[in-house]
Image 1 (tube, rainbow over the protein chains, first blue to last red):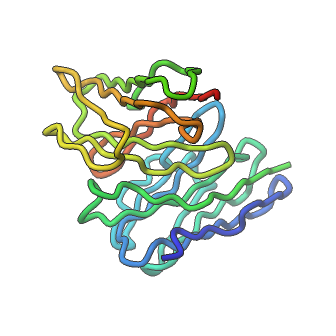
Image 2: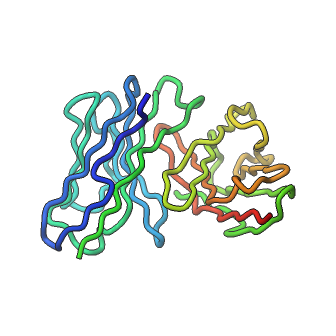
Length: 116
Length: 107
């Protein structure tokens, strides 16, 4: 299995621009999570999908952030407009909900976002 | 609510043991433990289930305290490859990650 695949690995954009981060979870995993990691705030859960449905988006910082999961093999996290304080590493993780306790979360390699 | 880990950082020599604590204001249902190396993604190490059952790593174990508001991770006979930042994560349907503990193993 290729694992959780995220793209791009690095993104540098100017303030005000739209940014789209992409994630392909492991086939068969029906839970998907978006996390953001910064030195100051650590690993923050942004949103959780189960069977492609957003279950909890309480961690999404503000309306500039949106996430979708149109099918079981693809999810996007969009920031529009982007701001310098959005600079962070964004991780996507997936888990087989039925056996999460045995396997935990598998993380993608992350997208390092820099907004200048 | 984010679990608080202690110590924040620890340095040890190869072969030494280490203990990392994860504390919560509420009883922990079950706890995942992850290790993250610099510039990489967190990697799942093990899970401590509410009944005390563990699943995961050979040389790494964990336990709850009496009130299950703290979990401790035990690293025995540490190796250079153990260096990294360790996170606990706990929750129900979604896991909240702890504050992290930086561990460095020296030769």
